[in-house]
Length: 396
View (spheres, rainbow, N blue to C red):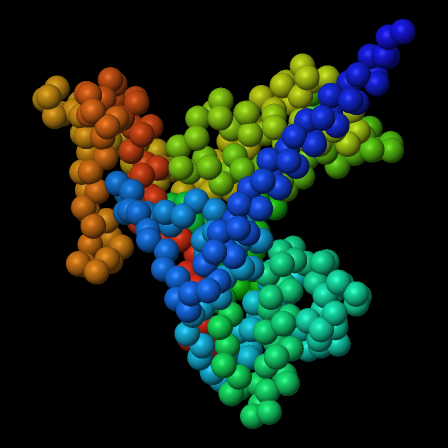
């Protein structure tokens, strides 16, 4: 007796999922063991390394303040500070962020928490036996941590403003690479999409690029291009809404840091492959064809949406290539520049070579491709910054 090919295929998929879950479980258990070993200490310090661009990375691989939701939820500031009126406001904003309300204005986020005070208190007092409102969050464990902090602040006998808080609040930029290119290139439209210019509520660059992409894909589908029609779907059952924000997020985010066209295609392929687990509408050949097609649409839409930013990137590449050609061959092993971002000594000198052994860069084209990513990365050396809520300003 033999198993059907359909059953064997489903069995293989299930085993792959179990294997991935097991890997994640081991990863989290090791971080939890590390946390239990450190909980006895009043202060814990995380050493950081500085790469050649000046970007800082925590040396502990699992438990650190730049990790994912479960790891950040295990950490708090060692030294407490009173919230104050400003801190109460930003604690509400932080909790709303962790619940996924990032598209609202700051005032609307604070109001959202005011409207869910009972849910916040219930989550803090009965996280597993209550309504479990915190589990609806985008980052649920950090949301639970914020619920407990805010609930304790509300119970403070001297008022929430005098509550001694230890909760860290992360403040980060949005689409940092595109922010730098948009600023350098004076890209007014791109600046709005990456929140460089004032707006009533946060913009989303990925959604803007996706809308531009879908216009082109719909035109191709009307012209009977099969791969475009496959991307859009028939509209029946699960065969619809295939191209989502998360489908194109990684290739857009990494494009400004030097990912190759092949790398972009692989990132899209992996996302489509995961989607295909849910509906099984495509073959592997279909997915490969779709990922190559969508890669070109991403690049095309980036050129339209961030026109000046892409021109700025091209200028850096052309300038790098020109400098390369002007140098004697024995000097073609590295580039050196001073970053505009301040450090403790004022600025940072970056020395970028092609490899650790510094052999000559093989061509102007390679040099032009290698330089822009570290040049832009060196302008933003810090990871998401953690503040105590009371340190943040109150908005007018």
